[in-house]
Length: 96
Image (cartoon, rainbow, N blue to C red):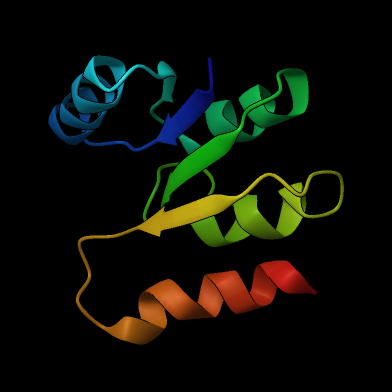
């Protein structure tokens, strides 16, 4: 069974995603701050990470850059911002 980490500070959004993914047969873990999210990535293995950009204590951009130093886990960037660059820039930065 695939395991997905959701790093999203809006609890209602996180719960909605977790419920949909659980119903689809995935195992799901949620983190609500950037600091908790990066610790979760360091301490556990995930098949996919859903990553919000605007997080408390450590942004999604920072998490993506930091995790790319030790992990190649696929990441889907999620954001309420509507500017395309908001979602593309972190992905580009995470490749480096």
